[in-house]
Length: 336
Image (tube, rainbow, N blue to C red; front, side):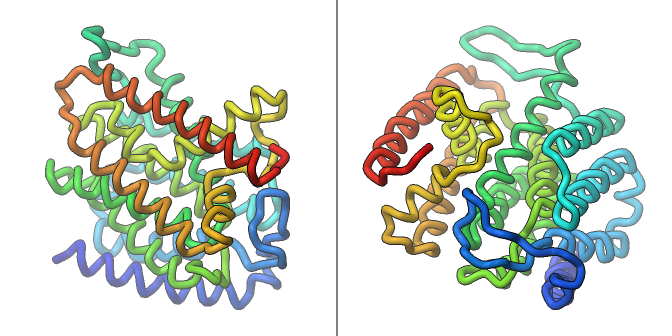
């Protein structure tokens, strides 16, 4: 009941904070100008992530003060990600600066013993990371944080996908009575439902990097905490849509000799939206349903099982989808 009250209050306060930010967006220089990756054609308010994160920060201590005190390094790491994302929304910063902040914040997590030390068994081989634990954790966190940022391209998509992923982690936390996972997933689910009220098609405000970077970081650390209960390969399925989209886009850009960070309109949501006759809600429904199927599969995997075959299945997914989307790009005559 305590958690339910926090959920409701965060939802309400997030609604109010986003409404205030939207009203003053122009004055506070929180405007999104369309680029090659954008689906919108006009300047829009952005930075809703600032508003709903402030709501979370205001409300959470009233319900979880003692808990938060026990994870000060983690709270500080989250706050740094929030700051760099907010700064990027207001002033714009380079990918290099954001990457460095993500690295530093990930290192801070290790002070609360949040890092990846083992990947489990693959084809009868136990993979323990030893001195590679921190570098690999940095790679995973920075990779997924960027992945969630890349799918933030059409109204309602990143918020909806994030809710599905966070709900999966909440289930894991609930099933194993892990308060950390339950609290961090539930407070951001509440904030995201408020955000979707404004961001569902046609959106009146965008999340911005303040939201997408923070959510990517939160989901990453919840994934790391969940490794106590689920196999590492399950994380690929729980975060499948952002991960698959990013891997496919990166492979395509590498083969074309382009920068990994080059903006284009060749992501999953761009291609599927055209197939669905430019219908944004249907595109979001399709991708969210797809994410739910992947998540349900990932939740079924046994932590003690050999993960090799499930990794192969995921890699086959990458190959099949890469070929499928290449056909779409060719048919749609896109320059990617």
